[in-house]
Image (cartoon, rainbow, N blue to C red):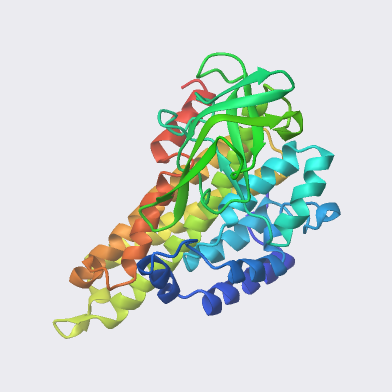
Length: 380
């Protein structure tokens, strides 16, 4: 499995790097947060990203997409992570589009995917619940059959960008007990339909999510995504793709905050010399650098395995997300420490990376959960 980028992927990386650097400064991120923006991102910037083909990366060309893979998605996500770009790549593309690509009917694909690729339709996936604790198979929301329709009851939490989604994908239990792997079905839901209410949540890093309440919400059979009762397998696959993409985004963010820290170590002087000349700080910086490089290998390994359909893809995703969670927290914590007093202030941009590290760590499972998942899969 290649752990380096080919020529086309390097070109994509340069394009994404230049876009994030010139179109989305940290000053913009601060303005979105401080202004209490209703969306939390820019629709115009999202359409520009779609025009570059990024919203259609995992979507086949037959439906208006680029027909690329997880590695290309990771390349773009890493560069967006460098600028903490909040546009809905994770929710709409990595989760929503992938769910429809892998589980949708031909009718669903033709109806939804072209509009996603063009940037006109936003998607959100509701799978987390109050007691699910990262487990996509722990589903309390119920869907009962009533004549020729399904009736949904329950609540989803932390639905990424659910407050702006044009279409929701929610998991519901159609059979079995609350923690069974089988008996889960995914449904396409209109957020404006009767019985559906969406309440915005604001995450630690200022990004948007939502609580989605379903109170006798009604959908027909055409809204079933994938095979009824087998949605848990589809959901697990989609979350693995999104977790790998998030790990790539975290890689970009930890690289950016580390570069900020190195620059500060070179310019901040104490006792007449740059503080970066102090051996203790050199050692701490070297540890962060090493963790970033290990994360890079893990992210590329997981992304390549997903593209290849490898049997150990889920294991490599668990490794990548666990390592990215630990490494990003380390890089962000060390950045605040090495910046000294100014690093503790909200006026300095380094704090944005620490908040993003905390939020990203708890998305799709933290490091401890993924280590336990890996251990369970191997009978440890």
